[in-house]
Image 1 (spheres, rainbow, N blue to C red):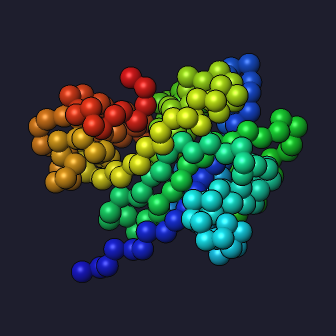
Image 2: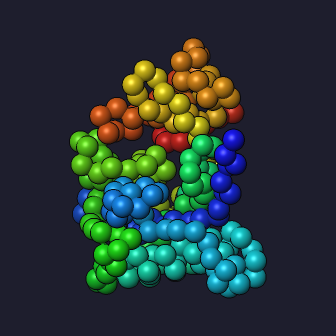
Length: 236
């Protein structure tokens, strides 16, 4: 038997600015050759490093903020202030994946007049998109995303400005998300707590549905008959 990989602490930050279409975010496309999320569109982020922990006096959550700021600078050339970051959620990679992360997901404003600079190595492309545009592009199959990225966009979709988002999210609970993978026929899915098949990792078990199913490259969210102890990940 192969031992489960170590779950590594990591963080990511959604870089936001205001636009006429509402919130606008920077999306980065990872190198297709990368083992983890190769070719996917993501937000800046990565694993915590020793320098992040040292800067935070070994406070791991504070270190995750320093890591998010560092990765934003390294991957996009943009500055995200630690004190302006708002925690949105915390996701842990499903068991069975070759690389597993415990990831804090933040949002932070950035200046409008700073050029994006990518390294051309780990990151191969970038684009500013209204959050609504990014969601629509994913539904049309033009932006390949992992579930945490897509669900983060859905969480932000109803905000008109960065200021509104910050005011609300600073006082909102940040869900702890522990997805598990399964299949339903030919369709890949991730199930969340409250789904009938969650504990058995069996998507065919009848009952409440709390899952996202990948159909045609698009993650479709299902939340029906779920115990209120497991609230939806996005507004219904």
